[in-house]
Length: 381
Image 1 (cartoon, rainbow, N blue to C red):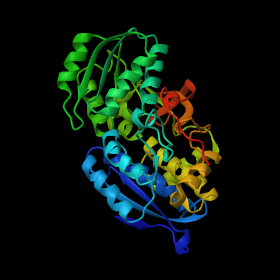
Image 2 (cartoon, one colour):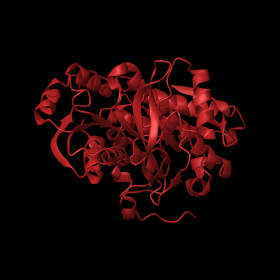
Image 3 (tube, one colour):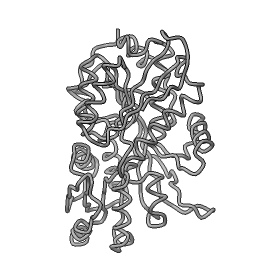
């Protein structure tokens, strides 16, 4: 579908192609990225960086082949600026096609190691994180909490495999079990039995969206929630998952680069605007990342109004821009991925009886990624 969100002179109009997951159990992830991005556009009266934009949104259905076909069609429609992909396996199908056509991709979520190291690209930017940072922050938190043994659970796809390695990069205890689950799995009874038998000090699980809701509910039903603590990163405990599982999440330890209680002007503006527009819908980090991606693109368009039609000039503009962010401090590493802080959150019941994620402290400071040293990026001209 296509949504016209700005009207201006034809030569000023910039189309932005958003390929994202809008259907299925993980559909709310893409919906929140889309709506966070749209919110930033709406706040600027249908423009970004003073340039009128047209946001073109398509559902990839979590199917890599769909995403590639959508990218090809958008490129044929002369779209040169892209964002929105949620999952790594989908990105592998679409992003190379985008980059091979000298278009620009700004990731608002997934960011595999493939594009962070030796295969980094001048037209590839990430406004969210490098995927490993999620597992690394969770490993650092589990280590700081003193857990001696850990059991790891993640989906059987690229990001799931990477997060296992990333967790172990910062966690120095003994790994007593590792399980890979299906991307469409909803029954985790076998996994619960294996965890019970292994008797770890802590379980690290990465199950995004609806998978995370099913896992935590079954973890509670199996009687494990009060026996073996869970340490997760935000993909496994966002505000939608928290609302779905309720008090079952009490005490859950979470790492994140963003939370709705962050005390900075950009985040306050975002949270207030989101609540005003979607008063019965929690702001997730997916929504915050969509909003941030729009702010990043706006900073580039302000200095380079032609956008990705001149990819070299747009890249220079992005790298030289002051980047506003809901996270506060934010800058690009050498591979055009974020260098940012990571925090420890805890799921608690507040004074109003609502389950919330409360920021407790910092886990990692100015944290980049381990692949940037492998990236030989040409200087912006």
